[in-house]
Length: 473
Image (cartoon, rainbow, N blue to C red; front, side, top):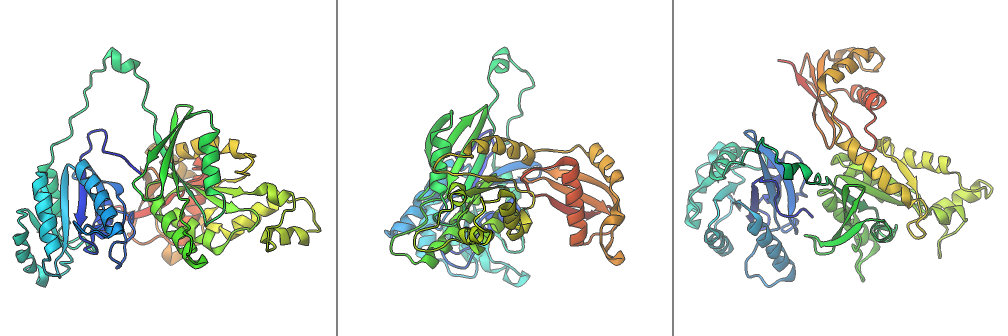
């Protein structure tokens, strides 16, 4: 997905054998659940990238698959290959071991490999959750890695010392020169890249849509091999913008059950969402919204991705087409409406009822096969990308607050808070911090009311809004 580090930001690779807590450590450092975490060894197969800020400096973090050197198993060999690429990119490396397990031969072999790389190397002895366990890591000095840190990725224990040591070993980023030469002024401004994941359950037309978007657009298109085993990213440069499409197709395997295909669709969608800014959620118009569609959409929403809903195969609905072998849900609805032409507004209303949490997501009706309606996708992507990165000045936020009548929010008196001021803390997704008289979790009615008021004033088309509360003191 993401390529090598750019812009002078140092890269820190997290490596280790399977099931030692690498993804948990990654999520803790990055500050969000960017990697899939589970008890199954080897759940992270590919590299996942994220950014973290520590002591005012930015780090690029790479989470890798579990490594077992020289294991000939195909999957493990692929994991090792991906991790080796991350090592080549890295400016520093953290090797993670399970502090509650004994040192194994693969640990020693991996440590020797990392030491030979000559890069700043740190050993995180993980799962040291209590003070009683702090004396256990001593035996891990046998690995030969001098900088050893007992940590608990689960609760954050010991990470301050680890990150401080990492920063100390890394060169500081060079300050950008304030002098602007004539040559620099004449250089075209670098295009901002927007990563777009095409998600949806199997057979909704994701591959057809990818081919349509990358094959017929009047733009430069280039295939870029991705870090996943199945996907190839496609880059489209259009109107000075740059879109990287992350294809989530190819998840079905011959011989697999329908249930397995559905499970894979959720896992792959979730994995590709980790690298995306915007998700194109593809719905099969002839089937309507399924529980699987809602589950995939939920992952996109909860992870803070901007979302555009594409109702594909709309031409089949309007022509009264029925799927071979079974009557589709949409077709049955049409018959119940006395075979009247498909009502787009009514269909969209049913879709929004099924996906209530995506009220902010624009909906397009398209046919990826014929291309009808697809010409609206790129302009909408540009709009949503801009909305995702939009920042509202604090002064404007305070004027906004003065105009909001919070008495209209249906919140019990004991759960109300007094809001002193409000600021936008970050973008992508837009995140707002309320400074109030007490540090409590905002009542959901307060959050919903405030989000509706923010959208009415500033729109934020296609992107979720995150709201956090802090006590002023």
